[in-house]
Image 1 (spheres, rainbow, N blue to C red):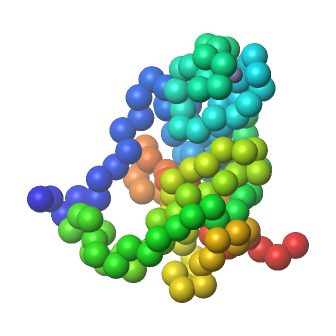
Image 2 (spheres, rainbow, N blue to C red):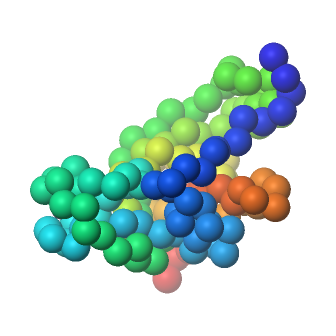
Length: 137
Ligand code: ZN
């Protein structure tokens, strides 16, 4: 297996999402019929099956819904990253995203912890939205 980190491959549904990430904006689709947000990007609303939607910029704020600490790298390219946090984040817009929590000791992560989006530029095309503990306001 290669030492290359596996990278997301934007497709027709997710292209705008990845272009937003490159500008350090977290974009979500909002249904034009029922107004609910959804994630991951797809062409039909999972709630009402409408094809109408708009891309909206998320505030990038949410909380930890669930998480696990990864101690064994799933790919050789992740060996230097363990231990790291794989988490399900619930954004304030009501959608959940599978992501990593970075910028803190994995042992301090807990369910309900407030988090905010942060962006890691992996290369010229792909920027990965991740989350870090939210600054106390
Ligand atoms: Zn809908």
